[in-house]
Length: 584
Image 1 (cartoon, rainbow, N blue to C red):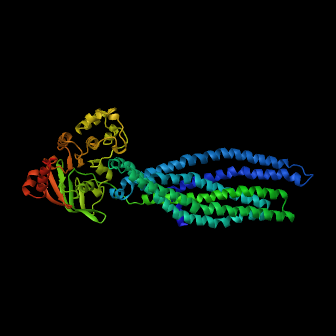
Image 2 (cartoon, rainbow, N blue to C red; image 1 turned 135 degrees about the vertical axis):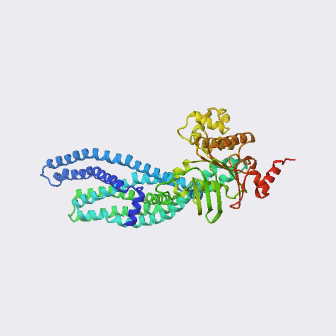
């Protein structure tokens, strides 16, 4: 019983009480809709009474009673159908909408570590296909199952009123067909897992192929890589075929054979009883006709097994995603006092690989701090810990004197603007992408931020200016253009802390100078943390922190670090030497 309760809770997206109410209306609707079938059978019986017993008059009082029942059924039908239709078409859609919003809120609270470990195709399958499966199951399949069960119940009552022996002959073969349904369920579970895996691989392969098409074409690999995608799609096709031929066949073929044997059994039992004078001819004919109308819904019920197993898997994936633990949030978040950021003996790693080792750092308020060092030294990881994309494995990160664990995510991120190395723009206008920094900003404020980020001129050269649509991910813009728009977005947000992760890596020298001027203008009011490989772009920073192997090796100004003749001086020398490199 507990297992069914959990399953039903999953299938109804946690709204069990609401769905039970909806289902009760559906059952009532099915009962009301089924009344005319029973009335017509009784009407035929009443009309045939004079034929079976010559001399008897037609019982008009019973006819009028049946007409009255139909009239009451019609009035009830108008009310019940309207209520059940609106509840299922609007009520459960509202439930699905609420559940999707809750899922969005849940995903928003998960750490970046979760997203880095999950495939995009997997998540898109859950958010799109699995929710659609649950919605279809709740709105279509369960009500149909309820309708079939109601009609079964009515059929048992009506047929028992005529002859219990014939009723047993009709229904005795149905349990005999159930083993084939159970076999099908087991095979559906096995083949369904393979189909699910192939669907996720296909979704991920399509996303990867479309996203990397420029790189594939550049290296003349579009055709070869498409063969890999084609193989993935073929596996999905074969899995879809297998689920029909290896799993659905026992129900569709053997189950139908057993039920057809039931028709023969009804004919044989009815003929035997009629020859012995124990069954009127009308009863025999009625049972033959009704048997066909009873077995067809049974076959429909068996075909729902495929939908049931598929939807159950969808429900499990939705539940598993909801059970992912988000970063813990304090019941009442603290408000930071200033913007000084401090790392106290912080260690952190992705999985078993530790990236930062006992880092102690202070980022003074309203100053510019540059993080430099070899690739993989932990520079980006430090900025992610400041924004609490992850929690440190040990030690403490504080913001304005408050540990980030004791601040709400809303409060923390409200105080931070970020420009990532890999910029993502949404399929919206350029102005819409910049306005993400502050949704209530005026057009003039958007333009001012764009000018500071040195992107106003190229925006105005586009056909529709700020109203120009950019492709998904910013595919219609160059890397440097996307990065400048991202910087404009951060400037518009006007947060007290700005994190720049390789913000100038895709800019030409002229625009890099303009961006540096914009960043310099922010120093008086902002706490700025810059990650850069070009040391010349950060040599005027108030503080330069050198990282190597996940540890802080040097801290100081540009001049101080050069005199130490350490890692920074070596990097400076190498970059100056590389700057004089020429093609011969």
